[in-house]
Length: 86
Length: 257
Image (cartoon, rainbow over the protein chains, first blue to last red):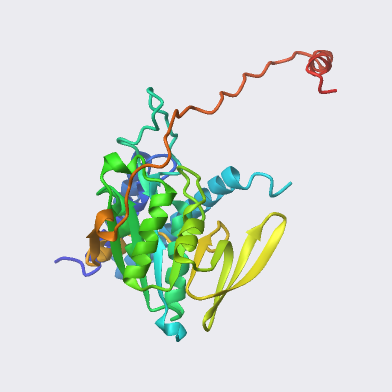
């Protein structure tokens, strides 16, 4: 009965949840939206469609990592390299 | 010495997270650290990333991550391991002593560890975002009597030599260092990877060895006394003006025009 992709979906959810802890608008804000996104697609049964959704989730992971990196980089640049771009 | 025989040590510091608003303790002895989010110093992340990239290019064979401080530092070491370091070394300094631990002591500890482990490249962040000392790398190089490449924005290994591009005032300086050497990372050296959950889990299998400063023969007697820690001056509130004439009058009053 268990879907072979179940494990992958759960891993994706866990990874996103972990990344969300650092979300600028707060972990709670992120978690509610993350959950809503997964619940919205809970009835998807087509394996191809599920794979597509997992790929989308992995893309979001990449985007979040980039967001966090840039946010940190900018904060440090502002604090330590004030006069650079004048 | 073949390049593949290079082994690197990376110093990582656990600091208050960059995004947290730092508060000064009411008794002015320091800043509030209890219940505050901590993470790895961003410049240390850059140093770890550089070591891991060199390892991925097969230019170095092992990366050891070191941190000095209380028990919680192991989380920071774990992050370094998740980013790709091979093993960890935790120099356990009790919280009471850690308050007075200065770059002088840390550099002595690092120098002793480098000798003990026999590594030939020490990578550090140029400074920590909590005390902003920018001294550890320089002092460690002095204790070891090794060449140093500080504020590195590019590092290339060339046999027994290291080419380091340094960020200096108004430009870049390229230096060539004979290995073994100390390198401290500047902001533009690389883009550190994110320590993902699966990698943190995998990192739990990697070893973290715990050592005491006394085992390394380092005396932690404080050399510097903190007299008082205070908030930076508050920004003065501005004033609103109704018309252009008011604005001009105000500016004249304050001597701007």
